[in-house]
Image 1 (tube, rainbow, N blue to C red):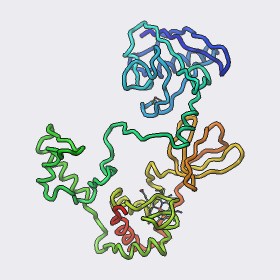
Image 2: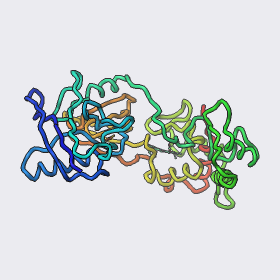
Image 3: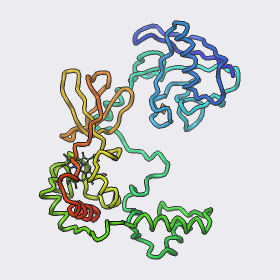
Image 4: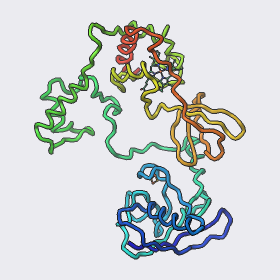
Length: 343
Ligand code: HEC
Ligand code: FES
């Protein structure tokens, strides 16, 4: 299809800007809007012209970075969609589309369609943000108080009771009925929930939570980094509810091979600021331009990536228990941690 664009071009802050016309025939209806701009930019680069500057990051509709105005509407004409998730099939062939930056005094223009949103980072840095549920299915194990991993359910003892909950939901709670599932599908779900809970300790071995607790607080040196209740350090994740959050098999894997799988909220980063200061901490969020972390002193910090000398992910500092502890001791620790279900 053929698309005509009128794009706000401005070389930098304080420079004179104007709308410039472009047109392209090379557009497939299945391209995203940003892919269409990539095509236009490739053409400009070949001609030796400056490509149109615009913001994007994930290109998966998650980050919201691609927020410029299309025909006066932030993120474009399709409701509930971002520019990167907008497809050219939403436009008529031959149409003219006007692209402008989000103009606001608090968001000064950087170049073309890019504005400086660090004001927003400063608000976040000083604690001014709210968490918003953005939909999608949450991980079942992370719903507070709900535990599908251990074969013990608060409201159901028998398979028949579980089936009933899946079919009919639980009135006055967020658990909806699933009227479209066949009987067979419901039975399979129940079988899955039951199998999920089967813990398979090595034959002849069973863990002793009391010995595990003694190890955790003593020889294991786990409290150097972890906290349970009011005991221990906050450098590593708080394990007060780990028995609810992870299954025994996953806990064991974390002990044997801490680097193998790290929960998104537990990733560590190290950065060096322009004046040479090193900051390490737990990564909260980052995008193309900024990074937010919780440093070792538990301060929320935000940085512009452009101002940093270095920015890198750190390996987990957690030592593998394999070398330090016997397999019986590890089984004891897993038994102890699995029993932790909150303060
Ligand atoms: C030097 C600091 C340090 C020590 C010592 C340490 N850990 Fe960790 N641990 C971490 C960090 C950081 C993470 C998060 C990154 C990762 O998963 O490796 C972690 C992750 C974990 C997890 C996974 C948590 C989750 O949310 O999935 C478990 C379980 C755990 N540690 C248990 C232990 C036990 C038990 C000990 C003692 C034998 C111990 N750790 C010793 C730093 C440490
Ligand atoms: S680039 Fe569009 S939402 Fe992330």
